Image 1 (cartoon, rainbow, N blue to C red):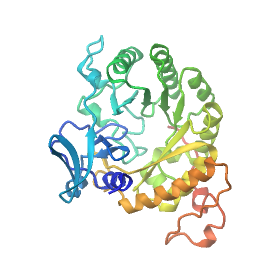
Image 2: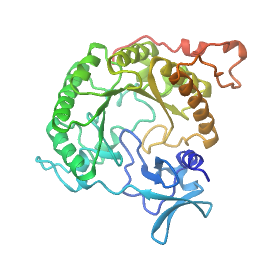
Image 3: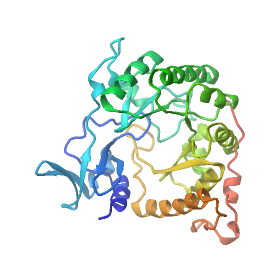
Image 4: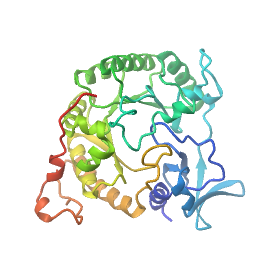
Length: 372
């Protein structure tokens, strides 16, 4: 089995492992997974937690002390598992276990949620798939990571684990100006103390001048995650972001590309939320033309969220979308005129797609901006 097919199938089906009790099951980011290096080529974070994983044809086992992935009982690929971070064995000067300050999402990337609470969480604006506050309930993290604790942890992670970059995300703060000011302060101190490249992930700020101020504070790249381009899914699954509106996201992306540079701004597009598939590739094309890199990933259910029982999309769906997205990115990166055709579906007629890069449905995905 080739490594691309293996990665796509593992992302959709998951991997059964002997013991998943220590795998993070809440919070932001790629939760409920382990990082695998596939020796035949590639790396990936693979889901190992969730009801859907129990029926996966894949399981992990050892042969002569080496780890292998098995499909239906047949060994298909040798893999290496990422060991536990060495910095997790230490505490900050305030006595906080560094494991509660940050994690490794892969061997070289330190990631943490600066603000572990979200203003959308307790009302109708909450994203239905998000588990950001769940890790506060089980006390596996702290509500806010201050600059001192982060600098201490990052310096040790750089020394002991060889991290090369940092990702900071956060929940939506009730006071945006205060939060962005604090994030800028943290990034400035982290950059000064470690020199590490920093990606910061935020929602579109009311005042776009913050983008330049964040760059001046040491932020190297920016994530502004829309999650979906399907207007119905946008309003039902991510109602808080829908209130911000597509127009504001586009405005923010354009300004962020001007500030940080092409491909130094990114967004996540989730597949499996109930969207029409053509909105994924149309959205990816829209982002790429602006200079925003679209990370297209399969939805991964988190226990304790409203979507905990929704299974990830099938691997054949993901392979089809990845193939289309690769064509789009290759064409735009080469400066070519778009030659791809939007993905056909039962709900999309030729009359709705004549040369348009944004479907008529997407053009209506512009709810008025409301208070957050």
